[in-house]
Every structure is written in structure tokens, then in C-alpha cells.
Length: 504
Image (cartoon, rainbow, N blue to C red; front, side, top):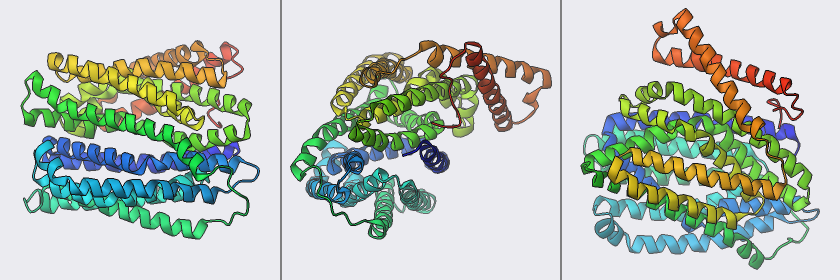
């Protein structure tokens, strides 16, 4: 895979991802204002439950198939199609058994555990989608391994449009009028989106599949054993993430909030704050999905020099990009939050969380490198530590300080555990991590660019514009100055490994 192909794929996926994230934010704002923040919090909890069951039931087959098929493609003579069939044979039985189990125990889950009769039907509907999700994830992993990003992007877009469009219709004409409960509306929307995405992927696979004559380099038994670390990683992450989400409204109630207030704040956090923080990271998410099969191929081919070279450049660009985004949220977080939610609460939290952005964004890339290099055991252990820290701080700080305890849990867990990820990456790739180039110079550039634009703002009075225009102009000018100042500093310091923004 040449570097131009990586750049083109990253740009294409970023454009799709940003568009979908933008539409998702618009939908969240619409749902929050139409049904209320508490309903948004309830939907977030349902989505957490679905994501948990989907990952467990599919054995995270997307990552398994993507990585192992990529390694097979990297072999001189391999059979990626057979590895794909291994993935289907492995994931479908697990998803079917999980779906039957959830369907049988839906009454117990809905009435006794979640204390909601409406959830029973929603759980049963979601159970039917699990085998569809597993098969679709396997096909998506196949196309990801072959670097057919257009197919994956198109299926994801189709699935999102069906799911979001249907739920928006339900919210506007059924839920708000009391004709349908929000649980059923959301579960039907998810099911319809999953089915639409699967049919698209299945048709694309039938059209694209190739005939392979070579034998597969691994057996089905080996596929299963290679997948176990990936599955354990997924289970650990999913269980702890779900537990963390479930504890947020509970600990807010311990602080003294009512159930309605706790769900409202949780809804704002999940539907407004987190999507806003992650919206600029679309380019990194796109790049990470490309890096996993790319690193797997290089690992299969044994080319460690290229691996180290790509790692060094990607880390440098990630630090540079994330530090600038953090500076923007530090300066305009309150305005962004108010525009999206109509209240000051979201803006204050965005501004407080801005120092954690470089670590949050860095995790996206570091996890892609670790998984591409097959370090799933370390990734699982690190996630275990990360969520242990997050949940511990959550349980201690939220009852004492309210929502600011959630902010403390994010800051503590991200800073500590992403530092350990960097150390592991340095160890396995043997890159030289330069603190000045990766941290100090981008921070200096961000500070200078923001200060210069602030002076310009006072001189020409940009505040006569509305908030959206002022924020957009401020950010655009700052970005240009940031890149210019950073490049000048690198030239002055005679850095021969200066960031190349035109290629990877």
C-alpha cells in the first residue's frame, strides 16, 4: 500500500465520517429539544446496551476478520476468502446463541433489572438484529482488509441514514404524541439500519469476491485461537464501558440530583458533549481504520522499518492536530456548547475537558497501532486499568462534586493510560519519541496563534458577528497561523523530521 493510497483513503473516509457525525449531532440536538434531555439520556443507555450485546455476540468479528484477512493478503500465497469463511463460521453461532438467550430472558432484563416494561419489547427486537450485525461486521472486515473503503463507507452511510431517518420520524410523529414509547422506536430504528447495511454489504461481497487457489496459511482452529485475545479485549472494554455509563446517572443521584436531573445531565454529556469533543477526530478515526490492516500487512511481511516510519509520522501529526483542537475548545468551548444545547452547562464542561483532548485523540491512533501489531493482550490489560481508574474516580468524586467528578475521571484515566500506550508503542516499534517536536513546539504554536488572533479580534472587532461566524473565522485564521508558526519553528530548530502535512 503506497502512501498516496493511504492519504486518499483517509481523506475520503474523513469526509464521510465528518458528514455522518455532523448529521448525528443535528439529530441529537433535535431529539434533545423535541423529547427532552432525560429522553436523550435514556436513549444513550439503550444504545450502550445494544453496543455491549452486539460486540459480545459477534465476538468483535470486524476486527478479527480485518486483521487476519489483512495478514493473509500480506502472505506471498494465501487464501483471504477462506479466512473470511472462518470468520462467518466462528461468529454466527455465537451471535445466534446470544440472541436466543437474550430473547428468552427479555422479561427478566426489562422488568427485574432495568425496571421498565417498555424495555422488554425493545430487547427482543434488538435480539433479532444480533446475527445480522455479526454477518455484516464480518463482511465489513473483509472489505476493510482489502482496502475497499468506498464499500464500507457506503454501507455505513446507508445504515446511518435508515436508522437516523426512521428514528427522527418516530420522534416527531409517534413518540412525542404518545403513540409509541422511545424504547421501541429506537430499537426498531436500529434493526432497520442493521438490515439495510447488511443487505448492501452482502450484495457488494457477491459482486467483489475473488477466486483463490492457494491454501490458507492458518486453520480454523488457529483462527479461533488468534481471535481469543481480540475477543477478550472487546469483552473487557465493552463490559467496563457499559458499567461506567450505567454508573453515571446512579452516582449523580447520590450527589443529590433527582432521576430526571441525572438522566438529563447524562443525556447532555452523551448526546452533546462527547460528540462535540470527538467531531474533529473524524480524520483520526478514518486513519485508524486504515492503519489496522496496514500494520497487519507490514507485520505479515516482516517490514519493521516501514512500520516505525509510519508510526513516527502518524504520532507527530496526531499530537499536532489534537493540541490545536484542544486550544480551540479552550477558547470557544462555551460558545460551541451553548449553540448545540441552548444552555451554559455543556459549554463549561467542553472547556474543562479540553486539556484531555490530545490524550483522547491519541488513544484512537495508539489502539489502531497496537491492534495492527497484534498486541491485544496489552490493550486489554490497559483498558482494564483505564476503566478501573475511571470507575474508581467516578464512584469517589461524583457523589462529592457532582458532574465535575465525571470530568476528573476522564482526565485521570486518559492521561495515565495513554502515556502507557505511548511507552509500549516506542518499545515495539523502536521509534525515537521527541518531546520537543511532539509536544512543546505544537503547544507553543497553539499559544502564539491563539494570542495573535485574539489581538486581531480586538483590533477589528469580530464580535459584531454572530457566534457561529466569529468562531468559524477565529478557528480558520488560527489554523493558518498555527501551521505557519509551527513550520517556522521546525525550520529554525533545523528539524529534519519536520511534519509533512501533504503525505504520510
